[in-house]
Length: 635
View 1 (cartoon, rainbow, N blue to C red):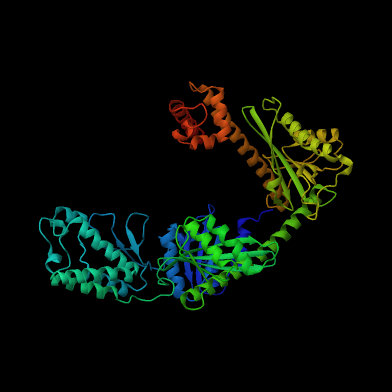
View 2: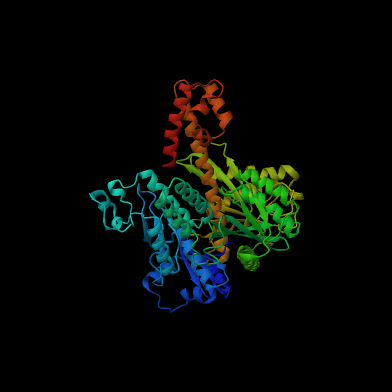
């Protein structure tokens, strides 16, 4: 049974590390709602959840919405501070806008969305066409950067309304701090080029901008334009200005990933740090199944191609905690995926080595926490299954539980679904859909009778009831077909009526003694057993009831999704038949090629027209009709 969020959150609070770092708070939609920094993650994060703590109304509102936490351990509070700002810039958490310790570090914004860009100070970056640089921990350093840019690259500082209404150059032009674009002192193209140089400077791409400026300086000097050459000389000196160094915010120029592995027996975890334009902007971790317990180098070799196959961006440099044996081959593979050169390395010193140590530290911590959580969860599941034995008077622990549910709309298109849980967890590989053959007209009992008869008749046909051994241990033959497994508990969605139908079907198949039955009525959440006059009523906090509810709700979801899929397909099929010029042959060609309404609706007119028997006119008619149907289905 899945743990409720309060228990999971409490476990996370108890296992917080007493080290500096950053913490991320998630709401019930799994969206980041707050990012914070701490000298001690353990003390700071726990302080939010102390009973009786007098939080401000806004902090109390935040705490009410928190459903889970994530942490990143760092070397120092300074690194935590800067990473916090970078994560806020990337994710824009709702509560970070309001809840700060009176410290919102500034950014420099280059308004590239404007024809004549300006350099402004802002408190929060946005997802727009402008460029943002920062955050600047030191306001003094930011002002120094502004002053240098103002002297060397004289961008305008007036507002857009002042710029639009200006009829003569302002004072800034008179003192050499503006080129007067408002009155035609510089054209748009030249001004944009200057703004792009400012962007390169702020990004720290000093080598590229230095080469460009040195070339321009020499060309101007050769043409005897000495004043222009002097301006380029000053710009060249400016790009050599050493900005404040920071191990997180200014790690190293360029883009690269840091990947560290941690493993324990068959469990492993990969921690990935993303460095973009010299800044640690984010991280993610992924769990791996290491069934054969291979060594770290082989594990890394298996992880890399799977990981980067699902990512759009592959950086030119990847730093690893262990090099795979086929490093050169791996680099070539990633190079093909990226469409450019890729270098794989094991950092030996410097900032990349320090970051790798942090990644390893986080990987080990996360894996350890996950192993502990899994162990606790297994204990809770085992206890819940034992509780079911006592409550339902079962002959043995119900390792395999099967649940059935029906779905229809106004009595039509009835379908059924079977979901399977083993050891308290969903086993989706054994899920089954049933498209019922009978015309049941909304008769849930008749639908239940048909689906149970079909499911258990197959089990009898395979080997007969006398040869069945109810599933109860994980040591069973994994190759045994799902139909040959008899459940340790048959759960039906409904009350006495549905339970009686199950008894009738299993009696007919001579399986009643082998398969215990229970029904869960959705309205009252009462449990019904065969032959019992009164239902079993459990408190809502009962783990046994919660497990049965989880299984029943999963069956309902699975049945409903199948019904919606068939309904959409039927709507599309009937719609095709309504289109003039689309006969049975063309319909057959469409279904054979695409297989589903969704794929058919995604096809272009050109793709549709290429099918056998189709032409541009017929394809256009199909395209227009399907998109109309597709939109209505979404509604």
